[in-house]
Length: 103
Image (cartoon, rainbow, N blue to C red; front, side):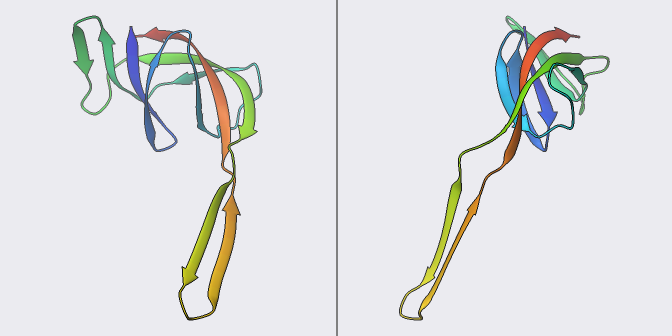
């Protein structure tokens, strides 16, 4: 069984037992959270779509860790104008372990 969830403005396809990194969620490590914005549920050949959310569907996940992604380097330049700008960014994330999908 799998589900398509929405968190942090992004959509993820998840199944029970897998880990994924999502936008930072303010929760303690080891705590269990409920993701209730389920857009679709699937099991084998059957798929159930929501309009926009599936009624009564929930995904339970455990917070494994918090961290920061690798640095993304931003470099802007205008040729022959003596303009160069360097910038870097590291996005925070929360790593989740999917426990179960209820729907």
